[in-house]
Structure formats: structure tokens, C-alpha cells
Image 1 (cartoon, one colour):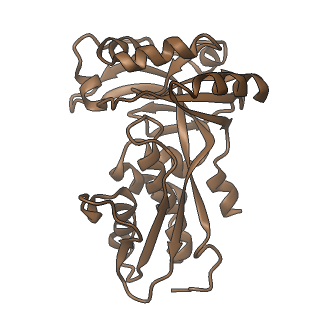
Image 2 (cartoon, rainbow, N blue to C red; image 1 turned 120 degrees about the horizontal axis):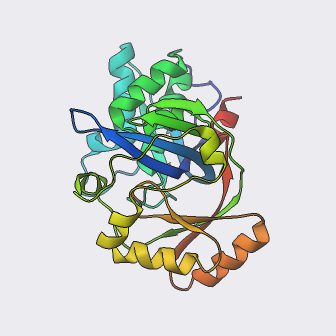
Image 3 (cartoon, rainbow, N blue to C red; image 1 turned 135 degrees about the vertical axis):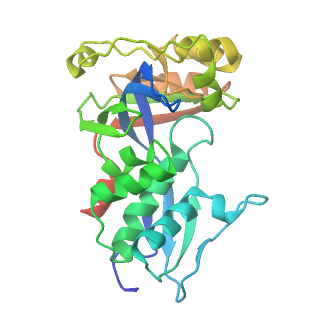
Length: 284
């Protein structure tokens, strides 16, 4: 292991994502839903630090009490790299958690993707980005887009990615005080599963419905209430299956005004949409 390699002991970003649109166009025989969605990254990030170790152990600097370490997505990502490459290297992973858990912003998936990208570099494994995306899919459906590192039009179960450049607007994101169970949402009988496929041009022209919105609002009142409060300032939308909701703003000032008026009632984040991941910038 090259412990002098640039990147050891430094902060690596793991950005949040938003789904700017989500259509469910069908369902496969194995139960997975076929989707069309648009992912955009944000400047709201977890931060990971990878500490050099002299043995082959993979561990967390601060394990979460009561949670087995080997279930953590960063640990699973590191061990998956070791299994894939036969590497005998180790690492101690430190996570600065800023993204809310269970909010639909992809925090765990982003942490896993950053671990794959960073350790591929730090351990000199030289796996291609495409290979890292394939490995990421074993960890979660959203991991490949974080490895990809660009705003993307996604199809299939979310693994077919095409670069797209929506406007990089200012964002206000609310995390309601509830956890939305994604599997449960996708099993609800009333969920729309036959939306007509659209083209990227249709999305750019303003088609950005989320097929999960109605069933999530019916089942989770805090999500419905957050949407109502946010809609006072701009069009309020659900990301993925939630629980987080967001609104876009044309200026920082407008976003800051909404943010300041919502903070006394909600867990609120001020962010900026990004079409290139800060993780890409880290690798330059």
C-alpha cells in the first residue's frame, strides 16, 4: 500500500442526490419496477476520511452503537473491492454524517460510491469506472449514479445512465420527521405502474411528475404537510419515494428567504443543484 499517495487522511465528498422526476413505466417478472428518472447531485455532502492502516483490516473509526459493522455500506463497499481484486490492504473509515438517514437523498449509497472510488485510487486497484458501477449495483440501485458522478437521465431499474444538464438551481430541502419505506411504497396497490415513457426533451419542457407522490402523501401525513408549507415559496416536489421534499429557486436570496422562514418548524437544508459531482473534482 502506498501510504504516501495523495488522498489518505483527506476529506472525500459523498453528495446528496435529488430525483427531479420519477415515472414508473412497468414492472419486471422479478418484481423490480421499471423507471424513468432524472438524478441531480447537490453540494450537500457527507464527508469520508480514509485512514491508512498497516494490516488488512477494514473498519469504522466510530462504529454506530448496536449496528454490526459489516452491515455498514462503506464497509461492505471496501470488502467488495477486496473480494473482487484479491487486495490484502486495509483501511479505517471515518464518516462525517450530514445527510439525513432515510430521507431519499441517497446518503448511504453515496457513502458507498465514494468508498469505491476513493479506495480504487488509494489502493491502486485501477478498476474502470464501469466496473465500479457494476460493483455499486450489488450494494444498491442508486450507487452507480454516484460513481458516474454526473446528473443523469436514468432508465431500467435506475442503472442505465445518460448524462443530462438540467439547470443548477438553488434548493430548499425539508426532511419530515418520518421514515418512508421504499419497498412498502412500491408494493402499494394504488401506485401508478403504467406511466407512458417520455423523452429527455419532454422533461426539459416541464414534465417532471413523481408517480410516488400521491400514495406517499396519503400514507405519510408529515410529507404532505411539508409539501404544503414549502409550496408557499415555490413548486414543492418529492424526491424519489421521500421522505424529503424540495423546491428549486432562481436565486440564492429567494432560497435563503424560504429557508429562514421554514427553519423554526422543519429540519431544513439549503443547497445548490450540481451537474458534476464534487467527487469528480476531487479526482482531478
